Image 1 (spheres, helix red, strand yellow):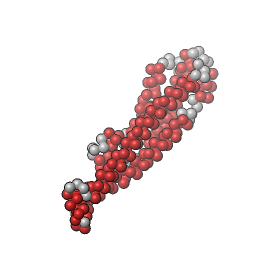
Image 2 (cartoon, rainbow, N blue to C red):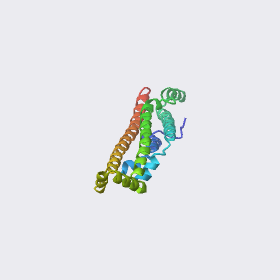
Image 3 (cartoon, one colour):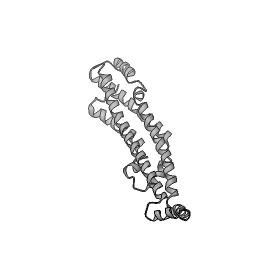
Image 4 (cartoon, rainbow, N blue to C red):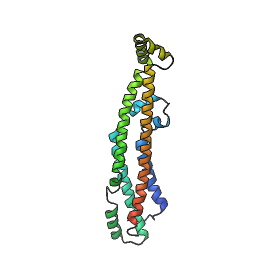
Length: 210
């Protein structure tokens, strides 16, 4: 038992806060540019989104959950030591109440849901990137010229920002922005859920012995 340390709320926060923040950043780092600045360098952001390694995000999220479980066990042993509970009794209690996977079992559905949304966002990014490339730059000019030639009314509408290509792009941008915002809310909800679950588990399990 780590008797050189005395448990405190500050020690609890010091060990867990960075891990909760890391968990949040694993999901948010890849999508924050689009969510926080939807009118920024769109092509750059979308290209980045279309190549995100979702398997890596998932495996790192599970790793952080495991580290949080380790931190809960460490804190539980220190906390029980304050109440003069024997080392053997404390270890047995922690093994029963804070066993490996005990936190993950409470979070896995939420993690899987957010991962699924990231998959949808990545797929949406590929579609959106294709739409951007088809309707902008030289390719967009060429397509606009062809459409104007084959459909003079549509060509005239483009001059006033009402052409079919402009409508297609605007609709696609709106749909993708809504998808990105929805994923952002899901990530925030997941982070808040983790914090609530950690605190509830801590309070619930220790209430059985203290």
